[in-house]
Image (cartoon, rainbow, N blue to C red):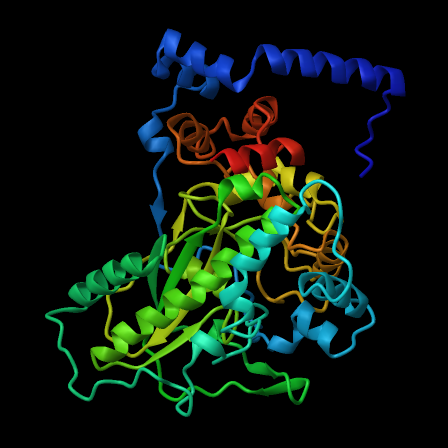
Length: 445
């Protein structure tokens, strides 16, 4: 992208040398030593550069309504508009990209070679996707009631217990469901009222290669939204096979999780519809369930893992106490940061300052004020990499492991200092690990 930088090549090289020297001098380790030497509070004050109270700056704000602007003429999403389903129907704009990606994924065409695509990494991919590609029959794009996501009456193995368990309150029911979800493998759990806006108007039928009515066997009252953390170290190797392994590992775990939680709820006498990417839009449901905010990338950012999680959900008629949507400064941070957009290999992520209602491709969910991802360009990069890429997740400043200094920097994203935090993120080298470094570090863990 042309940013209007008129430096000569020699000037650029000299600038790069100076930046590298400064980065080495003021490294993560150096910052930590400084923090320890002068005290965390003083280091924080130096970083923030404001009078700010950290407690107030860190406040997560709850909302009674959806904290994303929805147009008055919003229409429910027809699943066949999704970029992968457009490719399956033969849309020439994306057909070749998906065929290349899927062929590499299933190894029916040669996979990429080089660093990050070795035998060990490819073996990790095979193991990670084993449940998803085997038991679920590659459910990932969003095929309803398939494999472990069974819910259509003719398929359900875990029948609803006719002797219904009565909780003392919806709050008690939510507490039990959340405890069970965590036990079965969820990283985060939120509950939202059933909202038809996010349910697909129609779903894609592989036999007909077209939309069919999206019919539920019962009327849900609530939805349980589940987030599963993906491996940080594997994503440092994006866009290579370790990223694909991290993605597939969670897709496999998602099916196991929703299947177990569905059996738990059905055993108590209530109905469920377990879902991955199928049946309804996961991101707005996760926002309504209080798990996080919408990002420039177009995916969810949570306080705990940034953009590094995947989502699944369960519709149910079990009476539950619901959670409220939250904000913690993501939109404001994304307006200034643009690190994901700059790093995107296919330039699929918007560089616009403000979110808008502009649609990037036929796959855009129109009627939602957002930074619209160009899904066609994104899928092209998937085909070239032979993976789900993941560079945007890798470089996001919210993507940090759970260590105190990383939490401290994430805390800064909620303060008036957020415009300078991308500078510090770059300075400390986050999201810049080479594939060689990332792979070496991954196998050391």
